[in-house]
Length: 623
Image (cartoon, rainbow, N blue to C red):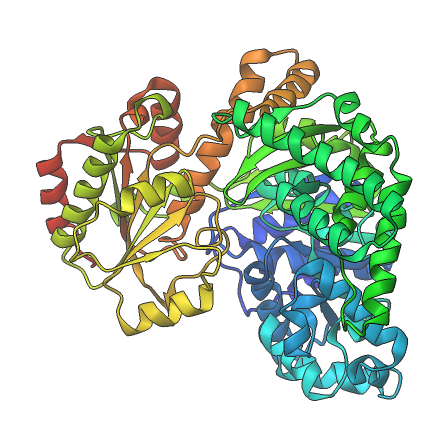
């Protein structure tokens, strides 16, 4: 092991290991060398990324493998770029590429703002016609020289993409080409765990070490990546286009019959199932509308032809969504289901992966090496069952209270409110808002308050009752993390209203230099996933594999809520010197099954009244 440690140190981007970093690296290296999967849990700030990269690069040098650092979001890609940059500053050059989806890496501002499907059509057209100068230039530059200069200067994803654009080349294409030469590929889960998707990448899994960051998200991410949806809005838009652009009366009639049938079916079921978020459907009930599907295919090509002949720059039609959905359900395989989903945007038919293991099993069991790491890794049984892992594992976990001194935090349960579904009403929302307003006004520090809600619906319902003097930032689809951080730098005295598991919670650094801008985290309600047919099917799969229905229920419903709470709390503790308060605002946190989990996690908590809580806020100050 001494030789391995020497090699690990060579790839470690710092002079010395911090607490737990050496142990993490050693456990990862041992797992890789023995053909097992490494399960690593440690709070943010411990330095998992540096340790994982050092151990994986050391092992990959010995066996000639590539390291693929897989992330879910752009924010999560910043850490490996930062550590590789520091390693480079120490004189150890490790070539890497960053690969995100094409729109995120496009230099043409007007094009990348298009909806995803339309962007892909436009991008394909510009490449094939030679009208994208960035694509054309990829074959004209010295790729090694360009990439070297980019790696010398870039310290985040935005900088990486901007640098390549400044060289006049397509960041996506040149990164894709350079992947075969790079030692490290930093990319999203998509390129390894999606099937039958329009963007693909040639990756040799058997000769790669996969570092999967924020691995608590992986089962849900795989399910989402392999979901095909047909929104009612797309059906309605297709009806408009068929009426307008199809001259052949017979073809128009055939296509409209299918589309109107789908419209009527989705509207009718949407009204019947108003209280359900996702309901399982019989495949035969859906397929009946596609008996004459050739009509949709013919209508699609006729509309594209008409648009091209009219000079429409992007000949896209929403009928492509109908075609894609039909193709998916026609080839339905085990582990997938068809559902009717109710979302904020309306009703959709959804072809969804219920069993992530049918996608992840072959990848994780056949990969040259695998590291699954997170600050909030679920229990081993959940990981191995959901992901279909049948090879050995090495497990190393650092608990929250092992890393953060108990003197640096206080945890309070306020049981005067709840977001329990059956008890939600306007009075309860007003009580929650009143409590948040009082906390905001009493909190004495010049720091931001992060409040986490179980859903957008609850967040919006509470917001309307907030005291007008509360300055808040509300998470929306358009909310930019970069803009949020800039806003907080100007004025930290804000209440951030975010959704559990959302983009303001996962992988976000609320830091100004070495200082954490958060001083208080409030969990408003227990963020249980809302029960639906999809989760019930997931639970049945787990129950069959574990032969324990109670454990299957806990893993399906309780552990996702626990992980979301831990993720939210972790925003306030990004280093072992951070100091903050945590408020669990729901009487259900007193229930035995949750109370025990959080007592074990934090080591302490106190149940307080409203006045006691306000008094506690006043006396808890930074050292």
